[in-house]
Image (cartoon, one colour):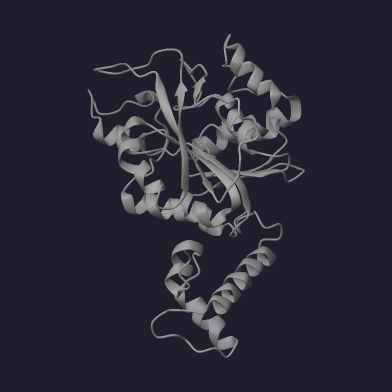
Length: 325
């Protein structure tokens, strides 16, 4: 049930109280002492700021800041920004699908095995002594992140959030306060990975929606057999097939797809393959550099310089699903 309050506009649409008061004064409306608004006034404020965002940002999906890279046809744009700043710069209801793999801090901070670093090689750490800045996955940060995702996502659309074991335990329950959680998918990496007690061979993908929307293909299972990289140009790099399966499930041609944790740019490549528009960001200079080169080459030649071969292996079911999209 919608609460027609100034606080609700702040929390769900990032419209600050001062701006609401300016709107009320400009329209000769009383400023409520208790913060409650009538449904008509609430909707009027919301409509005004959504339209204003669209006018300022031209096409309704671009941040104000100049992109680090933008394709000539303007269907792909990536930004060198932190996730919250980036999402706050996007207009409300401007994105058709969110699919992302946040750089959670939980695995590195809570699972301190050996020297306390389990991602990447020390000699390749890059800026600030590590490959990328982790997203400090406190409850407050994650709640802010999710509410911004909800604001920018259109009604009746899907979101895919990737989790490691630790972040799933602590953060996944928060998602239910913002989105309608539909399922938890398992990425079976086929090849076994690291682990002190039981060696890891999987990650989780939480599938949720804003409103009601069916999946396009009901034959997709909840376990995805896609090989992991044994060595990759970027740590935590995901196969493009993971994101392609999300698109097969939930995207239409020309959908605006958003990945606010760009990483290696795999989601961008998958979106181009599936004829979707793409917008994303990352705080890491390494990510922006590698993703830019990867996207440019793929657009120009069709060659993916960070994933030479398909990762679905000999799994005929996965291949059939990918081909059906």
